[in-house]
Image 1 (spheres, rainbow, N blue to C red):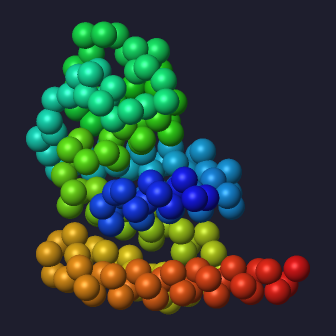
Image 2: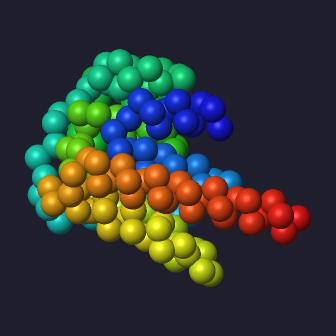
Length: 175
């Protein structure tokens, strides 16, 4: 958990939402299928928007500091975009997301909107979602589109974290 929090602190707000969502899914629902669904939706978003993505090389992946050499799954002369990484079936899904979620692979706005899309999925998995969790998604979307300040986003995040803590306390007291 401490390592996940460290990773979240080192990324932008949009990426931290994705990381929190991925961690939550892994703990509560065996999220492999949902993660793959999210990955598929991201590919669709990229294709729909015809976004110009930067061309990267295998050395760019190495600079990210993966836990194994990327030549395990890609040739030394590999070049491509984040979308190419997401489509690379020989790379495990979690590793594909790990690569493209790094800064510089996909525009921050698109990352935030994808995070919002994922964040909206979480409440649908809960019988009675706390409205603060829904509100943070609304605020994150407004922030991504430039119609909310970072202060407003931070306030919504604090409220969502409070909802998360309240939910955890309820679960502990129920045991």
